[in-house]
Length: 329
Image (cartoon, rainbow, N blue to C red; front, side):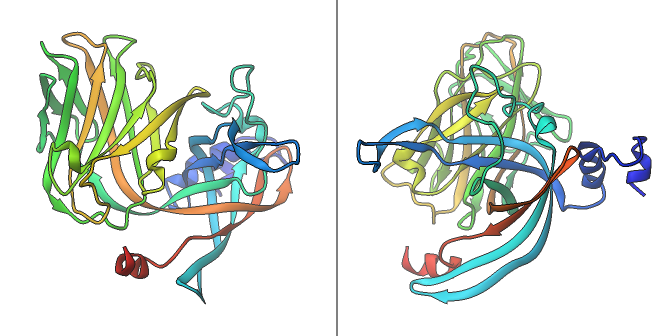
């Protein structure tokens, strides 16, 4: 029925439009984050070293239809159990994908050409905690002077006299132990050079840097014409190695640090944004702020490739069971 609504010539499928329509009818059609690990250089003997020659690719907002064939198969191994699943992931054709932000291949963004084996699609298994932007309750000024309003979906922060600094959301203790990623959308108005200096999750206490993990993108100006989607890992291995925020194909290296008292097992208490380069009256908009537990679908093989769409056979792998991780951490 949906195909009949496309208005396309017989024998042709507009997969991008199908995915948009299916998103209103089925949760299996949604936007995922595409990830490719960094590529390391090799020495004269062909052994990989510690120098990154191609940084990781971390592109949110890729439309996909995920059809699990096996969501989880619990196979006991030493130290716990691997959760292994299989799925077919349907995406638009590569030409359509290259029309999406970040995926367009240019001289300044030459690293993405096609989806390759063991690249992965990062999907949401479940939302662990949604930072509310549907109302202004819990949002307060930090070192920045702010006023807040909400349209029921997006929080609008209007900067006042002290326009460089922080604003944050505070709540009672929330259990976010199962979360392994942070995701949100942000944009600005009134100036084109408002920078997202950093954002923080406080676990165990509020506005105490010892209890914070801090993400600091390098020289990232918040866009004014479209939403920027940020999707980063919320796991201990990220501290030190860092992560990435991509906007229009440009990578903004993001350092990740944590305070001496930060612990992922502690309850979530506060989420904070810091901005700079603004002026009084400028606005910053945020929405869809969440800590979530992810599923990683790794590309195992390409089942079908044609001018309309692609079908990837994917496998799901994850580390130890949550119960084992909680027992030993």
